[in-house]
Length: 329
Image (cartoon, rainbow, N blue to C red):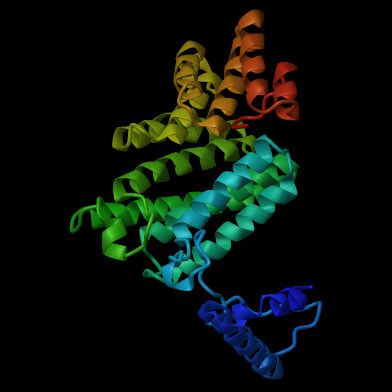
């Protein structure tokens, strides 16, 4: 039909843009023939390696390659933060251990890339590795694999303590504010933020480890759950995860060890209104648990309902409603 129309309007053949179109089509056919003749063949079970050499840059909107803007590969820090967040959603919202494990495996791959850009013993590497170990321990604990969980949590403690020791040494000779610039790693938090969160990671690792330890261990290390989140918040008042850790200490610790349900609830209410969906969900759930323990049934139900409005139907909130507590989750 197209050929008939062109023949009927013979004058079109003499227009310059039509001749250019025909030449372009011929050129594309020739290139296709040449490429096919020399292209490697990939079976259904294999795929071409996605390297810089064979991956074209993405194009924004316009198909004109000259006007396209290449999108740089995401920083390994960005990937780790995204995957650690995805692991949290997998546990609390989706209640899917396999999804959480997949996300943590991806974060580990990004950590390996980060480790290739800085010295092996740099606190940044230990910081992210300690977070991955903490989250692995938490996921294993959630799935009932307590032996493996304990091993990962102990590794997280060792890594956090090593990183904090190194930072204390670095503070004598350098500022912690310009690590992103000094290390040339995009999206890297300021050293002060990492310093703060290491105290939080250390506190959370001990808190989860308490589930597997006896009374003597808990008495010997209980002050760490009180002091480490406080140190984290002194260094960075905006550390919301440290605020959660501090609130959990107050509602879980016995009164003789510094526990205070009312103070813990107040801290968790601050977190619930922070705008962070994942942390707000946990805050409301723990407020409900604390209110239930205080005998405030109506306040407990309000908090549980608020948590379920964020992530409906989670088994963990249902367990807290029944009075089933597991420290840290």
